Amino acid sequence: MVKNVIVIACLTILLGLSGCGPLAKPTTPPPRPTPTATAVTATETPTTTPITPTLPTAPPVITLTLWTAESFSPAQADASGQILGQQIEAFTTDHPDVVVEYVLKKPYGKGGILNFLLTTSAAVPAAMPDLVAIDTVELKEAAQAGLLQPLDELISAELQEDLFPFAQEVGRFEGQLVGLQFETDIEHLIYNTNKLEEPPLTWTDVLTDEVSYVFPAGGREGLINDAFIIQYLALGGQLVDETGQPALNEELVTQVLQFYRDGYEMGVILPSVLEFETLDDCWPVYLSAEVAMTNVSSRRYLADRDLLMYTHFASIPTRDGNVTTLSQGWAWAIVTSDPARQALAVQLIEWLMEPENSAQWNLAAGHLPTRKAAFEVLGSEDSYYPFLSKQLEGAHPRLAGAAYSEVGRVLQQGVEKVMTGEASPQEAARAVMEAIAK
Image: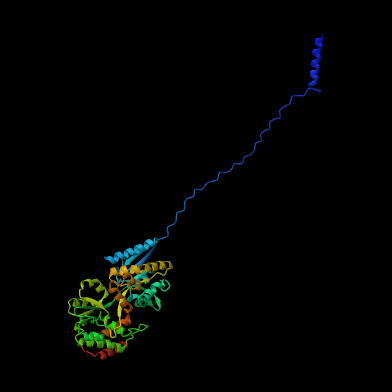
């Protein structure tokens, strides 16, 4: 009984120790938070535009149109045509946006270059070329018609100043540079070294050497030959004045006619000279060794000199020994008024007239360069080239035009009267002046 009481007492004590108040209720776990729905705004996916690489745009091709004669084009069927073609090709390689188109024209007359310029400018101006090659004797007429552009501010001063004096002179019209002569041919003397040890320098030498001398005196299409004009200019004479009017000096005309008459009477100047209209007419007579000396074109001598065993060259003998000759040749001129095309045309001209290019082409073509620097390229090993350079320093441009034709016609009449004995030199010169004055 006692044991039971003890057990109950112990249980009572344990229960009292477990807490003094009522029993704590079981702890309820905190409720889980209810997920809140968050509105999501849909974002548009950026559109990516594919980037196409920008290729460089090729510059527009410019076609430079050049009117020229066949002799001055790549179409010429000889080494000069090939060389010119190579030079133009080199230019277009350095200027890939440029094409040079050359259009061949007749050199003179109806359908010729000047004729086409005049008719095209009036009828279809848009068909005019950018630049042109033209004979220097027709340069003035083209400029008078307003067809050519001034070049003073376009062409480099270096090139202008390097031209021989005759080329600077012939390229100007009313004070402006309108053309650049790029080739020339001149007239000089050759003599047979088996007949003559030293060439004559003056008229006195010619008349005292008692050797035969031929040159054209028959007139060129009714006009006086260059041989007479050379003698007259060597005396300081003038054919036309600054206004283009005849300006002959009677005394100087008389002196040249007297030289002709004296040479004829002494048998030095042969009567056959009146039959010779051109230098080519004199050539067979010289080759036959019938005469000691003759006038010849530089072009002919360059072509045939390797065949001449006993021939040497010299200046044409003049009264005082002055070195004088006449130049004939062709020039580049610019027609287009468009500044951009002008600039390209100038670059082409200056390229073709570079000393090396000019020397190379002229040598192949049988012509002479008009730049002093080009003769430096040719060098002095061949004595003919230094001789030619000196001749060009004393050269005059060949003239043309109505006034020159008038002068040339009456002078030829004077020569024929003197050589046939119809009139004295003084009478013939007076008749020349009276004819001009009418």
